[in-house]
Amino acid sequence: MKQIALILSSLVLLAASASAQTDSTKSKKKDWSKLSLNNRANDHFMLQLGYAGWTPLPDSIKTKGFSRSINAYFMMDLPFKTDQRFSVGIGLGISSDHIKFNKVEPNVIAQSSTLPFTNRSDTTHFKKFKLVTAYIEAPVELRFVLDPEHSDNSWKFAAGVKLGLMVNAHTRGKTLVNSSGQTINNYVQKETSRSFFNGTRIMGTARVGYGHVSLFGQYALTALIRDSRGPVVHPYSIGITFSGL
Image (cartoon, rainbow, N blue to C red):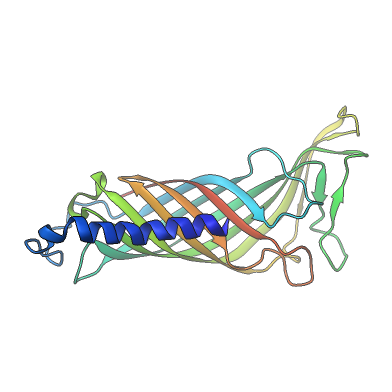
C-alpha cells in the first residue's frame, strides 16, 4: 500500500536524523568521507520475497490465499564522496507478482474493450486461479548505513524507485470443479496476453533492515490496467529482502 511505502520512507529520514544527533560528538572526530570500504558488502545482489496485492480492490474482485511477489536484482553501489554513509544503488533485475483469485477469473485474452473479471461461484470454475505479471526492472535507491565500514553488522535504510517494463502477463487455472467444489477435470489452463495492461510502471520503494536482511515495501505509482480498459488498481507488496556480495 502507499501508506506502507510512505512509512518506510519516513523511517529512512528519521534514522538519518537520529544518527546525526547520536553521533554529533563522534562526527567532530570522524571524517565520514575517508573510510576504508574495501571489505564491506555493498548489497550487489538482492532477492525479495513478499506478499502482493492490489489497491483499491473493487468489491467485485475476490482474492484469496497468499498472493506473492518475487524479485531479484543485481546492483551497483556508489558511495557519496563527502559522506560514505550515504550511497546510490542502481541496478537491473526481474520481478513478478502472482495474484490469486477466489472464484473470479480475469480473461486476459477477451476481445472486449475492458478486461472482464467473471464471477464463477455459481458455475464451473478453477479451484486455483491466478494472474501473473512479470517485469524487467531498473531500481534506483538512496541508501544510508549507520556503520559503512561494517555494513554486515549495521542498520541499513533505503528509499527509491523502480522503473519496469512488462514482459509477460498470463493467467493460470488448475483443476476444474463444479459449483459444489467437486472435481470435473484435473488439468491446467494457461492464457497469455498483455493487451489490457500498461507496458511500463513506476514503483516507489523503501527498505529498512540489519545486515543482510531487511523489510521492504513498494507501491505502484502507475495503474496496472490501461486507461478505460478495466478497474484502476495499483499493485503493492511487502516482504523480506536478502542482500549481499
